[in-house]
Amino acid sequence: MAQVTIRINGYAYTVGCEDGQEGHLSRMAAEIEQRIDSIKKIGGQSGEARLLMLAALLLADELHDLRQGKAAPPAAAEAKAEGERRARLRRVAARAEEIASDLLDI
Image (cartoon, rainbow, N blue to C red; front, side, top):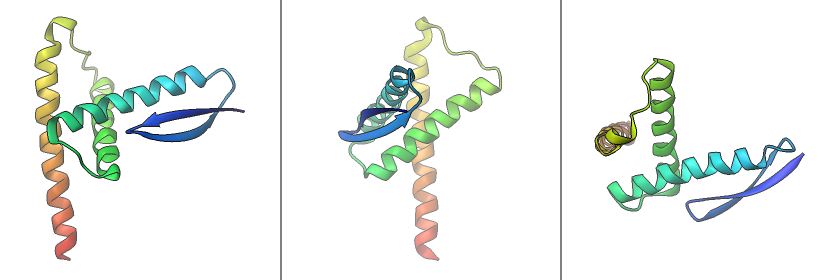
């Protein structure tokens, strides 16, 4: 079993994977890092757990769209898609804040 050290949001994590899958694992980590960077650009710094949660929600939303047969946007529409992702992230963040507030009121 191979081990790869990946960096996400400035933190190093050593992760085991099958031999030959090191590059794939590194690319997956880069995808997560990309989402975290976009979240930071939109909303500034947040806690580590919150950043990872929002990145996971963005990836889950993209996976949902793929499973529903929605094709990825063409390169010419990338700017529009980025705006839509930012709006979606704001809605997800607002909902997460509502849920957290409700939990604190319990």
